[in-house]
Image 1: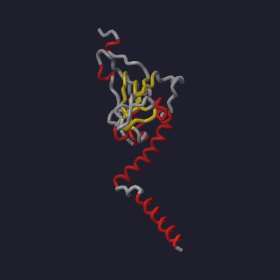
Image 2 (image 1 turned 180 degrees about the horizontal axis):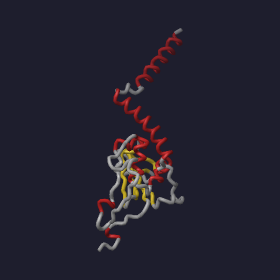
Image 3 (image 1 turned 120 degrees about the horizontal axis):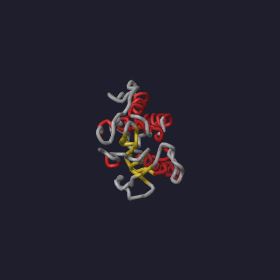
Length: 202
């Protein structure tokens, strides 16, 4: 009987310690944040399957704006689905404002593309998306980035509308040592910059 009693006591001690090791109940804000991340992950997976990142390249600001309007119900005041007759008449010498015009990617939509994303910056020239730069919330494996965004592996051939895929170092990641396999940002370039310094402006 004594051995059984000690066995039961030991069992209850182990159970008690196990319970104490469990994380505390999250606050309502933490629970909502976790739920939002799950929702955004599903939205992002669906969004990227319909609109692969490489397919954005060379699109017009209106095409990008219409994509955001259709998928996220975000309507840009200038570049939206209703502006079907958009033609960029800018040039790098005399009409630079129109030459570089384009839609800004809203910060509140970046995490809906993928919860790992902090912000997305778009760079346009002459009415075409020249470059996309994505900043992640924390460092992430480069191979994971390629997997998430369906990008070619290192050494593989590029899509026809992509000239370069670049990664930033993770030197600013949270309390993590430098690791060349990780990155904090991704850039995809469609064509080389062509500004006033690259053409003969009279």
